[in-house]
Amino acid sequence: MEPQKREEGPKVEEMKKEEGAKIEEGLKVEEVKKGEPQKEATQPTVIKEIHHHHHYKRGFSVFRLALGLFVILIGLSFLASSFGWSWSIGFDAWKLWPVFVILIGLSMVSRGSAVSSIMGAVVAVAVVAFVALGVFGMGSHQTSVSQGTNPIIAGAVAADVHIATGASSLTVKGTSDTTFFNRVESNSADLVVDSHLVGTTQDVTYSLNQRNWEWFSFKNLLEVHVPDTLPTNLTIDGGAMTSNIDLTDVKASRVAIHTGASHLDLVFGDTVESSVATIDAGASSIHVTLPKAVGVHLTLDTGATSKTLTDFNQTGDKQYTSTNYDTAAHKIDCTIKAGASSITVDWR
Image 1 (spheres, rainbow, N blue to C red):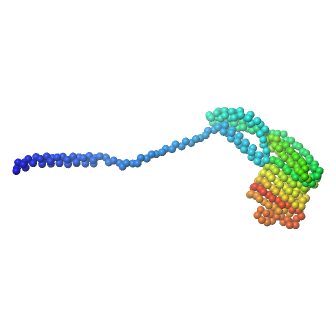
Image 2: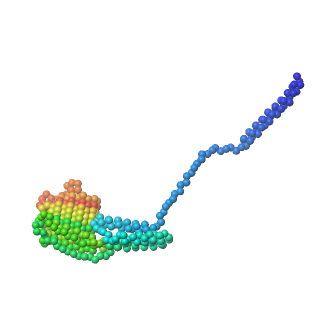
Image 3: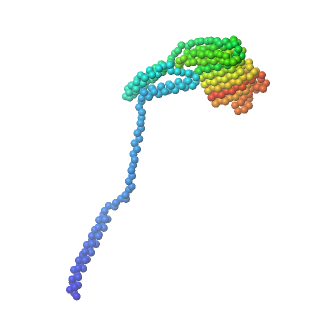
């Protein structure tokens, strides 16, 4: 039995050595693991977008400047036309094509220094001004004065007078003559008169026709006299104008005045039993004078307005009646429509 134990002894020693080696190897592995640097937590990938903002800045251009000036000029012309200043281009527009070549050349030259840009701008403005003078006829034109008469046509028992004028100074009054009288003083327009009989009414029309464009020394003075023997309907169509309408001696049964921004002095008479008056104006200064013998019903349909109404009572919204209306032998029904205005109604 002992020999067997001795044989097993070496085996046990070997097993112990192997086991010790494994334990030693495990310790080394642990030490290695402990000595390794700890891995950081994985961070999510962030993608940053970079936006490039391109600020486009236009440089100075003579061509754009000249084109803008042309557009402004045309706009001003249409604005003036809306106020009654009729205009037309008495010029062959196709002849202007070299101007655009000049402007393109100026635009190319002005792309350098600031000095060249300024010089190009000055030349461009001068070119536009020169063209405007040629196209629109701006400048100093000689003032012409003319006058004429139109007799009362046989068979006429009433008159219908229509005055169509643009921007002007207009005077209308009565006359004891048996003729219609007119006088015009203008440096830009001609007066056209038409008089004919419609039934028993004499239809008389006065119109100012623009013959050239005048900006800086504009003058249109028109004066019309109406016979005091004919009951008359008076219609005035005008632009921005100054009007002095004296109907003291005119048998005005109906009056209609249509104007733009204006200054209007209107004097009524008491030569007819009743009459109707309508004033339709823009931003205006309106002064109406009435005889004491007339009773007035007044309607005001206006914007921001300064009102001075002497001896009137307000009888409703926009309605006013003179204090003598019920007892007056002659009556006027007057309606005033206007923008921002100054309105004065008083007596003489």
